[in-house]
Image (cartoon, rainbow, N blue to C red; front, side, top):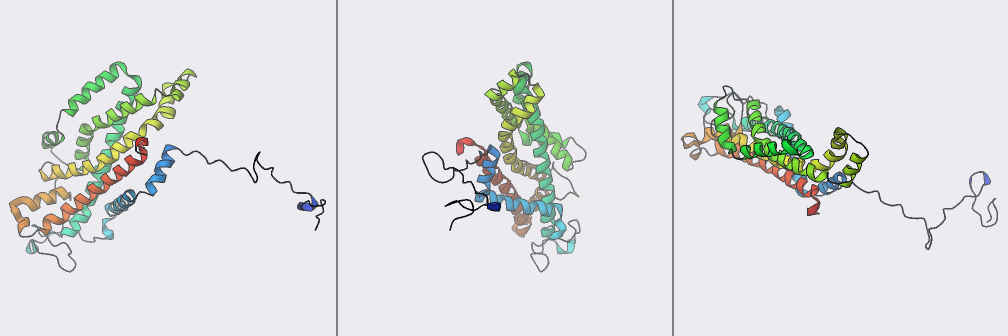
Length: 318
């Protein structure tokens, strides 16, 4: 049936003819809409969401963060409340992991120990990434004397074994708190990030868009913030993410050696050290097994996260 607009003409609003989109040259139907180009970060997030390693690590880390912020959700007892009469008692109803040598509930101490490890790992990683990126980025951007000076300083720090440095540094401090350990890790951990940041900035500043911005009169601050930093930060993020698990293990190692965190701070490394004294774990293996398992799972989760982020952000692995 003919519409109001004429023979074979489809009816539109108020009797007007509806104009159809012209077909593309040499074909039929509407022209395909071009897909929007995705950035490195959107591609990385797209890959991460489909990576089972990232999903598993993310779930474990989310659980650790939750119990670090609110340990009372799954452990209502006081980790410092101990009864010597129950020393080395095995698992029982309401005390799933048994008791340690001091009669403290092992389950409660394992849950509360997550806060210490996560705090040390996250704060140390943030400090190392910030200090290393600042020094390395400035050295790579300006070069010259500043770059040569930074290279020699990093060589000196790389020659210091980090565990030995911890033994010397922390043994000279009177109060060894979480922030003392974080400060030590930042002081000895920044050179690795600085070298990564330096190389990334040197590579990024040689790109055409940076040279064009310099030719148009952009200031050094604008070039660093708008052009170089967004394209040089990916290797720093990968390095820092992998190092986070290493810093957690380093804190536990120093606490195990007796120069790390001190009571009343609850630490997995200190609990492992207490379980090893006098070979008490031979008669009560639970006092060593559970804090060691919690430490291993935490370090493994952050290392898995770092590996997944590295695979997603490294174009050479695509």
